[in-house]
Image (cartoon, rainbow, N blue to C red; front, side):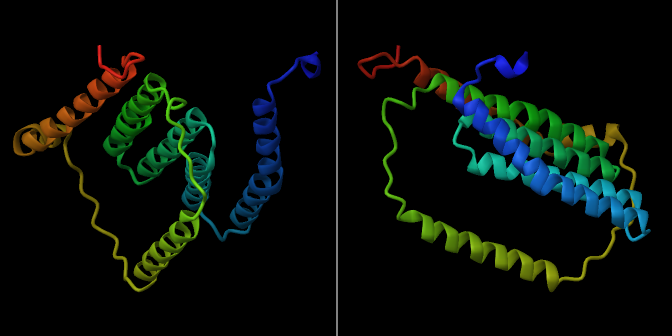
Length: 207
């Protein structure tokens, strides 16, 4: 019955691409990780880490390469949830909660509001693709610098420290109260600007 339902071409392509990636990339990746775990090479924490890392990379690639802005925003949510899982794996529950509320919720909702309230079809962006080689070179150079910094550094494990939530709240709202309010003001200004641009009439004046 479901096979008889007509699907939009874009949704059909999305489902096909997801199936290809799941069969060609996700299943072999999961299989390799599970085999290494069964052999005792990877611990349970390492298995969870590599699974979350795959989710983060997949979400980031979807946010960058997706042609649909809503799909890109949802991919960003997937990447943010994966990062929250990494924080939970590191026993940083507060950072995981902040990651979910701020990036998984607030920032993504703000992006979606801005995209829905602006009419991007009025002024289409015309590009000839000449910036792609330069962008690729810059990205490759930045990746090389990051890899060199990771390989050439000695990472020492920090001593575990338990910070009470009461002390964290005091530091956040008393010692760092001004930066916190400035960040809130920036988000409010961005939201008001998105609403003002979205209510622009046909003559280009803000009503």
